[in-house]
Length: 289
Image (tube, rainbow, N blue to C red):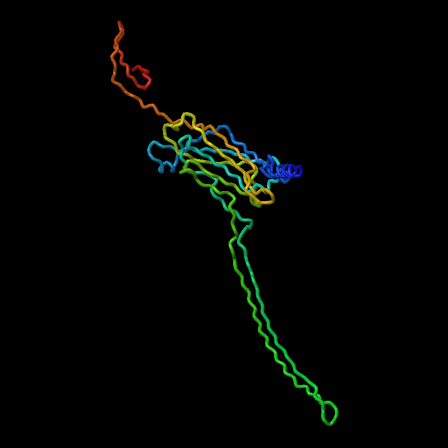
């Protein structure tokens, strides 16, 4: 009975996941721990240009630049295979018009690849026949007939071709949730790293009189994933995740006051000549003529 308890305790200790990365405690020494840093608020900039032609009446465009930092606090950074960042404006009633960076492919080679192959074949056949026969009169008769033949076949070829260098995705981006948000996925390569700051640029569509929400916010979800081992079996693991709500400062719409011209008003005071006044502004200020 005591042995059973010891086995159960040992199995429980082995199966208990470590706090970092969720791997088994004996194998979690190099499990990475990833943290993200997202600002509390960002300001939007009004976009005016040829893009306005794609809008419906009463809509406007504004651009948001969102910096997100990725830091591997501990563990093996090479085990982080992908960083995902999703920016969603559904809560503020916003629609995605454009975004950057776009999907990017990268190669380890600077140019094209030249492949050259050569082949050579050869065959040869040679045979001989000889023998010794006894002589009835005595002695030995030397019989040495021989047959020899040879066949040689030679084939040589040389091929040369130019191939395009293989490309691997380092950035994968696209709109999600019916263009209410954008999902960015970053992957490492021999030329890039996942650590550092990423500047995400998103252009949203909003009504001209401002966002429907009184305090518009963007929801940002970040995650870092890779491969981990559980009982020597490779599994997909999450090395870090964070969600944040970012306050969005929208630019105020431009309001131009149109003058309202009213008819002249006759004013007469005692001992003074008649004076005409004209209302020229929306606030009712009077200019004397």
